[in-house]
Amino acid sequence: MKRAYNFNAGPSALPYEVLQTAQAELLDFKGSGMSVMELSHRSKEYDAVHEEAQALLRELLAIPNNYDVLFLQGGASLQFSMVPMNFLGDDQVANYVLTGSWSDKALKEAKKVGQTHIAASTKESKYRSIPSIEEIKLSNNPAYLHITSNNTIYGTQWHDFPSFENVDLIADMSSDILSRQFDVEKFSLFYAGAQKNLGPSGVTVVVLKKDLLARIPENLATMLDYRTHVDSNSLYNTPPTFGIYMLSLVLNWVKSQGGVAKIQALNEQKASLLYNTIDESNGFYSAHALVGSRSNMNVTFTLPNEDLTKAFLAEAKQAGFVGLGGHRSIGGCRASIYNAVPLETCEALRDFMISFKAKN
Image 1: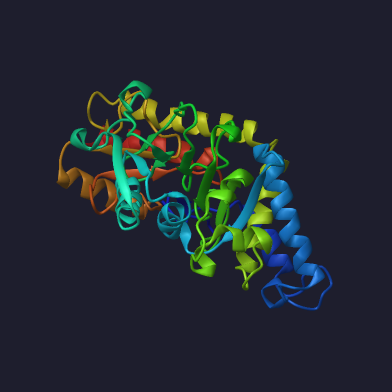
Image 2: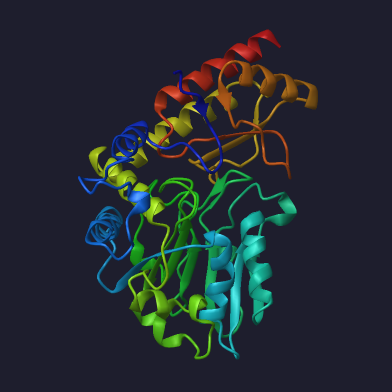
């Protein structure tokens, strides 16, 4: 079987070694006589998987002991509601930085809960950049500041995170978690859907500072209260056990590659390869994101006209490239080069781009 050149934005590529391990263990997980999908979430076999995934995530991201690690469901989209429901007080204002569609959606849900404020936005410039720290203007009495660390649709990424004294920083890290090193203690809470860098879709990782729990109001719906999941170690209801198992395999793979520092270096190499191809094309390819805000996860670009774009995507598909079409809201092209996308796959795309330009 020939593997596709997978540039899907999510669900996205998984490490080949992880898929092989899952295949080998699918029918009989560690001598249990059952698939991991058949294990009780209360069994000792599954408990070991659950605990290993938490421990590995703590190790790889250097998560301190004063933070809880949760495995939830509902994707990042449910976190858009849970965050303000848990932490936006009646007399407080939720502050949001708008850098793309997902931060827009997070703000929309917060507005249903309480007062909100747009602390900064790059919407008028078509989300081509990340605001500078100086451009962020907080409201009075901020409950928290929410950012989206990487923007899959527009191909922008925060390279320096904002920090304000006595203001909790909360981040949606769905599309770049585990792709680079960062200081966890800058954040009071961050969350991520697994389907980019952590594993298959179905699991949402939430990392939150224990101190935050004291702010949660009473009488929240049980499943929407973070305390429910902290108190039960994410086992209040049946968790997505197979997804968490796959998450543990991916985390083991990252560790085997040398950890997040080595993964970051490779991601920077892959991104530079493609951005250099774009920048050196004399305008045939144009990056959507401005230099200084470019994402190392999602490389977005356009061609001179729609006919060439269609031809590029059609020929790329014939050559075995998958997922290169831009998001339906903005069009163009997008190469999502998450952790599991090999350097060789990016090199193949570079060669294809150079060849296509030469012919056209």
